[in-house]
Image 1 (cartoon, rainbow, N blue to C red):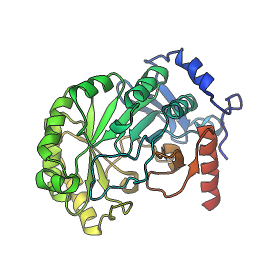
Image 2: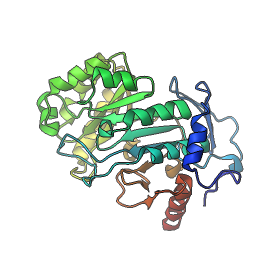
Image 3: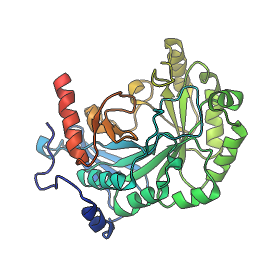
Amino acid sequence: MFKRDKDAPSIISPLMIAACSKKKPDPNRMKIRHGPDGTHIFDRSTGTNLLLNEKIPHLNSWTNSPRQVSIALTNACDLSCVHCYAAKKPANLKKESVKRWMLELDSAGSFGIGFGGGEPTLHPDIVEICQFGQERTNLAMSMTTHGHRLTPKLIAQLKPFIHFLRVSMDGVNSTYENIRGRPFSDLLEKFELLKGQIPFGINYVVNRQTIKDLSTAAEIAATYGATELLLLPEEGVGLGNKIDPNTIRELQLWVEDYSGDLRLSISASHQSIVNTQIPLTKELTHLAFVHIDAEGVLKESSFDKSGLKVDDNNVLEVFERLSSRRELIA
């Protein structure tokens, strides 16, 4: 059982949200987490990560909150991708719930929130939620989008509040169009709008169809100013089919041969293929990442079929219950 600070409140009420909203955090304050790998320091404004491992903090001081939390704001999406993982049941999170969770996670030592869906730009309060996170917490905020709803106006609205944008690009040209049902040229126009505005990276689902376009995709991403290529070997979830062993081997060879400028990263289930930039080798899985779906269910990952409902409960209390359940199963 993971326990929070004994002085921490058990519930964050709307009144507490209003009170916290009046007090702005120091935007220059670095966040610190203690754990079995050492002391991890993070600066959201630059993305800098430092690990001080000369001395391992005492167990009693370890941070017992998830380092990163993904939140599916909505299940709504205006695309019908052939390998879509997302749930098809209509659902939207209430903005006040999301704000409450952000305040609590920030206070508990979480580093960042990643908004997704569905398509998060279809959530009616996306800009307000991001603004709240930037101005009332010290959390880093990222968002994953298919990119087609990006306009100069929306980019200008999000620019002060989003630290990193992830744009999905599975294949190029006809491969992309067959998967996502939108002209690839339209996506390139969105990249042109983004260039120099919001730091962004590319999410790339890797499967038998898309592996052949990977080198070209990396070149295009670098041309438009992307800084990261996140490789996502396809999972057997939703409409997806688990990546086959031959394609995994092709991906391993591609990573070994890659000499471009993009930072490479990969999904947690295939971390051995790409060297992680933060050597948190002893970090427990549930402390690295958790997911909250569009129905307010806290899960160990976005691929899990079950979890625990957050509702009006304290999100950390639910996290502790999920952690305890995981330990019992293990």
